[in-house]
Length: 587
Image (cartoon, rainbow, N blue to C red):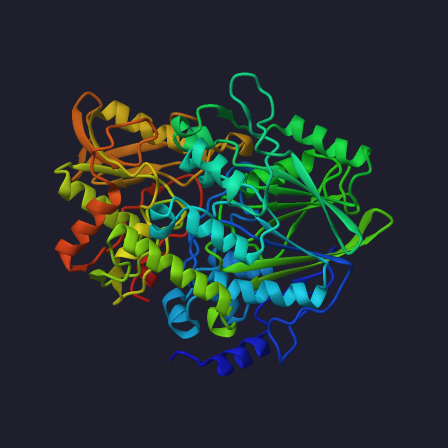
């Protein structure tokens, strides 16, 4: 059953669909029963934050992960809690919040509560809080905004820049934005984007100087409160993505420089509140928060973690009573964070936190934003000569990507690569973005692009020895499961088709991968195998086929697809969450 808007609002309100956390152990508070998006007035300034929307302008289904492994000191700590452990840790009992934050009962929840996010619905919510707070709000975008859809790709990010301007983003930082290349990024910053784009950790690759296009920070005044926003772009952009797209820029965590920037702000009495707008990933943010002095909050992104409460990280010089807040706001436009500060005498005295799931059935679409979205989509379709709504095939299974290991959408891509490229082995990147499709629904051209829409989409076929293939898996595992967050270089585990294997994330480097086999036969380290893959970070012939073309054509040829159980490795050395795929694949 799909609730109408009035029924949905009433049920959502009665359940208290998004709680609020008071610091230092105070009880969580519920929403007003007659208005689920009412937030009690508190303090004198509000930070509004979203991140990792990946160009999803309209509402979507997006399934949260059921495997998110934490290694070493990160084990059992947010964000490495999923399903029942997550629900218990945060005290979540309401089915709507369960659906928003976890994959538990996902298919039934999606059919009952509808899609989430959408810039037109987000715009309505943002404008409401701007009106209620009357000049006391600051809207911050954590990046990964310009990439992730067909229309963003076809418009060279133009549709997302115009939508961000319409939303009224004040400050942003980035990651996938840089995959459009230096020239396009400079063009956008010079001529198109209204927001400030900040990143203290982007330097000239030759001389190490700050790149003129990116300020270290910007100071904004809201309601008499001065807020400094320090930008922290994704540190490993030239490693996780093609370096040739940004040959003149270097990145990095640059913790020492971050402290210098914060000291400059604090020592110069330039701000009452210091925010780091980060695209590090949550584990990196937690470590940075424990080491930096003078930072009130790190508003983070990159790892797509939807956290219903901030973490209070103790440090030697925390901004709020010896702690720095670490916040992550999910992905795909599913959530809007509102962080209210009580600021007096140049310091944050207290806060209230609100993690607001954006249920599109519960929020009217802003007419102006929806008109812009519809116009951008029509323009992009006309330019590309394609129809986003074209139905390619019907899926019998729930399709999703997010998780440490292969999702069902990834499995389809791997199957397509192996069959179309006549290769026994296929590899697909461990990307976190990409919407979900419910069992029995058509897979549209638009949804195929949400899994593949990048500026380096080429499909390649290479010869690789068994030894080399194992090294590739070990290298990715070393980045993903490094016990030091500062050495985690982004993404989830590479997806593997045609090969079964086991992995021990807790093992030392070079010894995590074992039991490699094809059709039950062990892989010979000295034998050469044909391997199909896509998204090469090195420059290749642009005449090569693209992943979105290969995938779409393959889906058209299938008409109906059934994944079965995705090819997930056997996990050793750490408790995972086995069996959930089987339980939830068809709802």
